[in-house]
Image 1 (cartoon, rainbow, N blue to C red):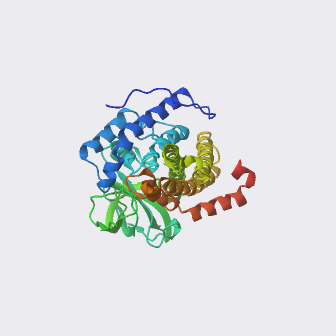
Image 2 (cartoon, one colour; image 1 turned 45 degrees about the horizontal axis):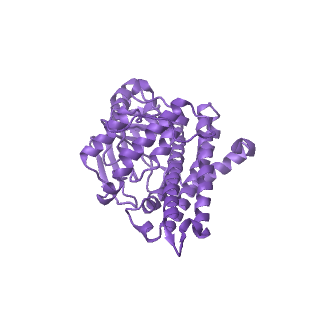
Image 3 (cartoon, helix red, strand yellow; image 1 turned 90 degrees about the horizontal axis):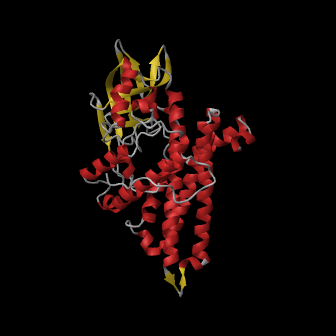
Length: 401
């Protein structure tokens, strides 16, 4: 262990965090400052890859510090955090680039809905850092509309046969198990169902592993399932239960994207402000020019508003609010923060000038990395549809307050 012991947070806020939550936040902050941020440039220059010893260090120290598997039950090897506590950690992880936090053990929330046998086989090992899962839902003709998926699961005497092709399967190049959304063909109908499919089964192939804008450790390949045979116990959440599990997954993912986006803005504003204070042009500090100071002020307003909105969603979820309201508000948070963070990154690049166009500069990296947050786990346009429908169906007051 090289992380210094936890200490009180450097600042107080009006958000009434408990001492335990502030300690968690401080631990996460030091982990990011001492382990992740110092290795960003190394990862960038290596095309996203890091030495095995650094990978193991990130995994080991995140476990030792109680920062991995946060929302999962302690019974399964997680931390049992509230959504608010998870926000505090995700915000800190968002301050780092190159997705180095992806090396921390974790698992999608879907696995917690598994049978005891499925939990023992997949969730517990994932939280120990022994395997990774990958969520396979998107298809070539069903990007933002999961109802249009064509992947099918045909019933056999002892199980199912899965056929289809999934795109943008994050972690798909390293996963040991795929969480596959398919149409279960039952009694002449099509029921959306999730299947746990071991990566080593016959009939699974990576058909494309495209390069993307960001420089991350793992890929998002296209994976084809051709006559893949699974047993009945591969179904998770019951036949036809895929939509409900996926809705809960989307809500959590969108909240996480918003929390990390808030952290990204924090880091960008912090570094751009320090540069503007210390850099002189034309006999004045950069920050003395409104062309620099006003964009920083706009970014600060964006970051503060996004943080309060995302915290509100987390606390509503913790309070057991109507899941449909939480779902709409998570979409609102993702929409606002993902758009605001991109504005913030663009402004920061401009503040740094030519240096902001170098990949060794945090603003350049975030300018690339944050762009996908407006696309994955539902595009900004999809989030606007969800929020608009909430205004109609649940009313303006419930959606806003």
